[in-house]
Length: 136
Image (cartoon, rainbow, N blue to C red; front, side, top):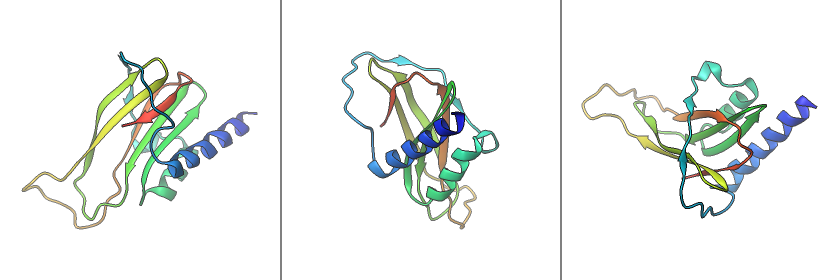
């Protein structure tokens, strides 16, 4: 049963990736900030790592649920150089949805920038609240 749940999460993640932004409008009004953790690559669940790797060259918005934890992934696709980072601007909960807003930050001027392509991705971990995630 546990493997079925993970498989369902992976299938859901692929549909979200193919379907674009959030699954619906949320007219929550007031939102409450949520505690979250930005997950290091080595701490990402293996099944999720595989999905991220398969789609890293594309923009992606993936939701992965592993028991009590929810992982929200935002990837910005292939960038021509290194030096990019991603900031979390908002991670909040409304009545109907969880809201996650991120920003891609370009290389700093004058800094050393790798000429190799990069694939900026951020993985945000929070408590599963059985709500849809709306990426903004």
